[in-house]
Length: 537
Image (cartoon, rainbow, N blue to C red; front, top):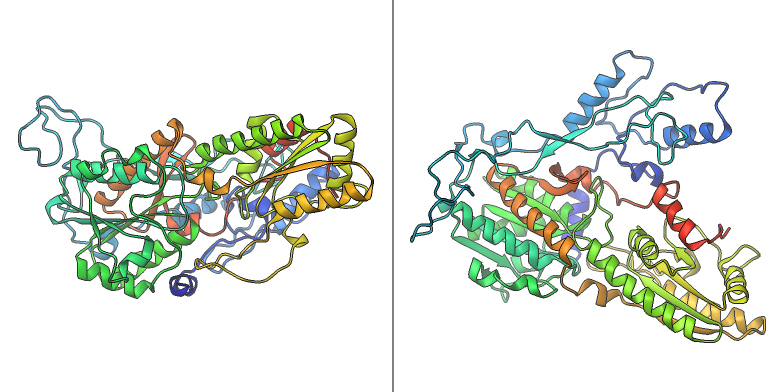
């Protein structure tokens, strides 16, 4: 089960990686900043921010070193960025690949009895995307390094244009629909919206004219397990699957080696692969893409980011996140009612978020009933004069009740480290929710104050539900654009929403590390304003 993870780890070079959560959250490239001295009139805060953000960026051998004393540094940076975010295309390996007019057309005037893919039209449709269309990655022009959330390359916060490829249908395509065999695979854990994405990939493939679409059962495992037969998919099969949660195809972690997967694809004649999953799954998709290129196979591998943790780089959000926050809010509301209805009631809610606290933060904001929000990105102490338990005592004395929302990856330093991992190579976490519950009961017993502590863990309830309206729309467009990208000849890409627009990104740039909550961000400060909690250090 760990074979794929090992192959991925050994087979993928991850450029531009930085260990700083502050830099990670903004996706800066690995540049060496050589301008050493700050102006004398910089405030201590400004100096601290400049130092942290410059010194914590790691240099990669594949990245150009940029000297800020060079008058052309800005243009060099922009060229470096454009090169990094260029997306692989079929013609990189097959320069003579034939481009044919697209079979995708939505301007229907009169339906035909023999629907063979695409809609007939008696006039030109002007809905195609030009290959040179771009989406702006960063939209805030910071005027000062001291601005909230600012990440600046130089002391003047020079505006840097960062553009990525706009997603959507192209006028020319590189696959003949009648020769396409498309496969869809869902990996990792469940997430609201999986069925919605599957549904719209299948429907869009049929609109292009593809008649051979299959689902690979139970993640990457389905490529090698002889007991798992591929599932034929059609509009009729997927028509109503979005009305329920889960995945029509099933999910699993880990799987066979990359070579075994590509061998299976060759045997089955698969030349389009749509991979739905998180960072690890996308690392696998990129390894599959590279192996197909190595074997000179004309295959399009396209990812659709799936994680309710919302920890995929560069993207506004991933599908399922809004639904997860909505369901998490229900759990928090239940905890509040339990706590508020009890004498000295304390409600503890543990939410998903291994390394990123987005769900806990957003659900706390949405509910307005959380007194303490704990996330992996912000260190805290349970005990001591400034610890969580001391603040709980204050809340009980002043309010009579309290609600704690904690992300599953928070406070792991308090728990026993077993170094155990799951099939995907993820470290198995200790149960911080149970630990807080137990320590809270113990603390209040020691100080002679009664406390009624209720613990709620809605993890699997949250991720098993169907997508809400917001996620349903997001899934629809992501599924459609995944197919558009494959037919346009792109491979080794993923599709996501960036500044409300849809874009294609090279997979290595979105899996370099997990996106995390910036403790200096406005959003985290909004959460602190809502909870009223102090620093627990």
